[in-house]
Image (cartoon, rainbow, N blue to C red):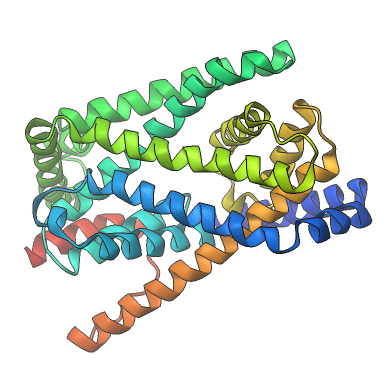
Length: 348
């Protein structure tokens, strides 16, 4: 897996270099100069979107975590985002980080359920927003039939997977495979102990959906508002660099870019891929490749900025935790997820 990550990054850098070489360094530099300080509002718009996404995540929390101060939840979410962005953990490292930071205030499996439900809510809201937005907006843009067919196929597969994950959560089947293995005496004592912890999480998941039936839709609503900020961001970019800042075109660019992100989420860092998808999105709506690359680079700089902010927040959490109990908490790896669930149970 480490080799896969390394080669993905190397190939991504090569792809980005080829894009810049083919489109032209001068064309990219000229557009970036025109953007200038306009990059700052782009960064701030993403910060506003993060606040809405935090509101969405707050509806996914249960137990004592629901009463945590909003700013504290913002900080936890930003710290998790930085770990997801800066480490090749396929989006898991940041989620474990968020659960760990939640458990610093209140011990128990509710930290894990809040992260699991939050991940589902974000993914489901994103997919529905892209699908509904495409139906409303993209039909007004002359897209090739092949693009529509690819979007339909990918959206169907992703939707089936996400809905399956919802069913697994709602009916407490997250640990069903592990429990089956234990029932057939596979895995020994280690797996048997893990079964107990995962069953606790399953019970809490079922309890959440029973006691808070409206919180998932409310969470998805706030995530949708956060995604809408991306359309504003695209429109603002077109306003600065083009003579036709159409809101419909801006929405089309965001929808196409986000859909392409959904089908390439497993590639570490998305280096090169992210910029290439923006070039494709801009070309599909009639703009130049140089403008699309400029937009991709601007969004990359915005992501790096907020990842840096999140990393500083994470460092503060680590420092305070080490000062309080003498323990140092480092960046989690994917294999630490089961250990995290175990620690939650032991500390309960």
